Length: 462
Image 1 (cartoon, rainbow, N blue to C red):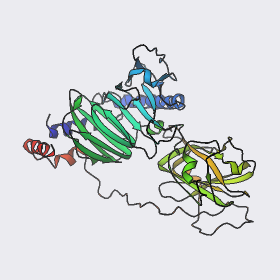
Image 2: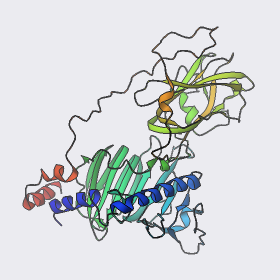
Image 3: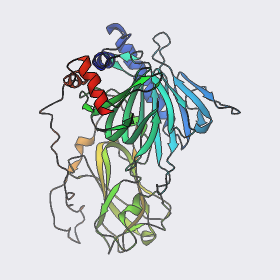
Image 4: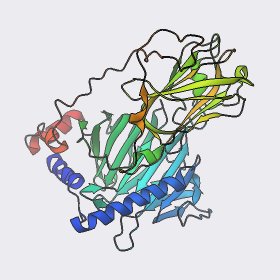
């Protein structure tokens, strides 16, 4: 298939699709799929490392030789290493079902933090065949267009990797290095990768293409294997994936694990990174230089809906009554006070803040310890991601207070939460959309005036 023809057909597949649900059916379709997603998120939120979760009917799993699987209904869990193949079913209008499965594989790399996982979400007409038990090498396919509502496709494979880690996969013979989140589609003659957060590198036929967040690229396939170099990365259409429940990938997970962190001060051998290293015993904490007020701030790397924040005290705080102010910010880094919590600090017992409704679109979390006559220390700070939300759910994030830009320290006898410095080095906010890219087909076609030129370009790349 010529590249021009392929790109044109691909855009039609993704944007128009096959077997589109009619207007009269779309309301039922959307309702069924949304309820299936919500149910799967609930039953799979506690899926552990190296486990697969049966999220929503129908899911079929084939076990490896000499293994026995009990994987028949929502909530069932199976060891990931025991699964040879797993397949989810497309939307079925007759019985009103939609298949969803969630896979979590432990990160097993030298120097990585314990507890980090790679998560995969299969939805609709999607199948994955494992070539390695840890799912680092596999083949997959998506029946593009079979599970469609209101002109959008739900047949996908989505992958999320831990904070600040790049994971290497071999998928349908294509080498993909991913650092964060991507959505993948595949048919017999093509694999496509759309990056929603972070970055990916796609390598085929000796050539590597870097794909940034908001971009897409892909590789032609022949007999299920790569044929030629990756296509140039281009921006994908805004809103193309907004219907997908990518928050399910991190639902119930500690998204602070391994994140970037900074603090007001740090004692020798007690760096802020120790508060996000997965150890909550109190023996290896971040510790400040001097008593309160002291703060520590975590950059989650992207906006996340937050269900809970947990503080595990270090030894220096054990037995003290302390007050902690919880602040959050979005990508704009403007901190907002959400709550001040006072209580007894005890090693091994977390101090938790659970908001009445999840805090929406949080990227930065800052904890300010206000009142304690001791060095401030936190063994671990966990930020637990909220799960799937329907469009009509309340959003309370806009109701929290914005901090004034006050650089002065709080008065010692002031009972109110102190004014906080806004984070230093604010992110450059130049991400406007004044010059949006044309659609995937048009952007590529401008480089390919005719089929002969296409073949010459391929030869040059080789």
